[in-house]
Amino acid sequence: MKRVFSHVIKIALVLAMIICWVLSIGYTNRLASVKNTFNIYFDEEEYFPADIYKMQKEEKDKGNSLVFTGWHEKEKQTVLNSNFNRRVESNIIFICGQSSLVAEGPILFEDDIKGCLIDEETAYKLFGSNDVIGNTIIYDSGEFIIRGIHRAMEDTIIMQAESDSKDKIQGLLIDISNDGIKNIKLISERYGVKEYGVNSTVYYNLGKMCTSMLPLIILLIIVWSALKKAIEIKDRPVLFIFSIMMIIVWITAFFCITRYKISIPVDILPNKWSDFDYWSKFFQECMDKIKYVIYMKKYMLDIYVISYLNKIFLCTIIAIILFFVNKRNIEINSMKELFISIIALFIITFMAIYILKESIFINKSSAVIWLIYPYYLLYGYVYLIKEQFLKRILR
Image: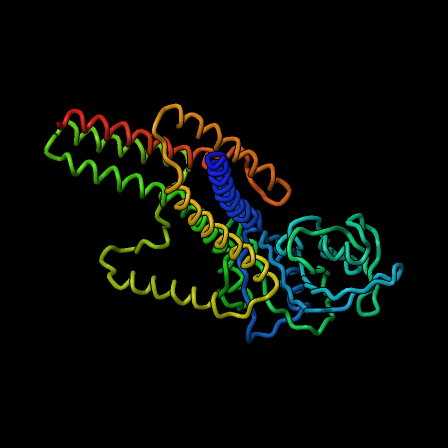
């Protein structure tokens, strides 16, 4: 009975580890689906909806492809469903331009002043259903027709700002999916808007760094243990060279499974190798940007992605802790045990994905999800066989 209970505990711990790691990958993929934008915040500058609409009109008249959306938000606004006599407090984001830069989902056209997009939670609170398209809500004595349910911030309604509104614009979202930095510079040159802000890919890259921690820890454990053993037999040239070749094989297999790519961003390279001040300036700029992101006022658009980052970080840390717990509990001593363990891992991974299928954005065929832990167990068994072989020939 104790043995059965022990196996159940081991399976539960592995399942918990895989669930946490799959969740972190799913949340990271959720950030990847956010539109690639650069968000400039107006802390001191004063812009109003009329200014943004004027800028957009100038771009259209000149036939330019530059796309940007101004926005400002109001927290805890009362919204009413008069038919059911239900009211809720919701945040409202007023936009000047394309809604797709602010939230995924249905489009709220730029001239649709009487339309709105709401989130699913607000829809249930007001109507008891998510089938709400075409229904009307009341805000500030005005009626707004629901055009769709967006897939972004909870408790948030999105509306187009009226051109004569005197509410200050709090930020400008610039579409950088095509020309990137060029679009930011164009905005700055044409309209005097500052170039300092936050690139949406920063959050996604931070999420990717977190989800990469567990596979990289596995790789470091494998390389470190293999190197230690290779150093022990350095006086046997043939065995030493074979051990180094095996390390290269394991590293190659790792990158094939994870598909991680090593690249150096162009913007961190100096124009001249003799420019010794470049690196200090570059890292100082990086530190300034990090401080800006940490200490700037957080709006709903920021809180939304930061909440995902927090989930990614928490799930990753738990997954790493559980990995080391499982590392102590699971030992592979035979080919039969290896085979059974890998089959069990595939079943457990399938269970984890099935349990989470409604709540995550994940490519179920991703090799790293299915193979990274079997890869580690396979190394453990190969290492055991190698140890036994070396003991026999080094007697």
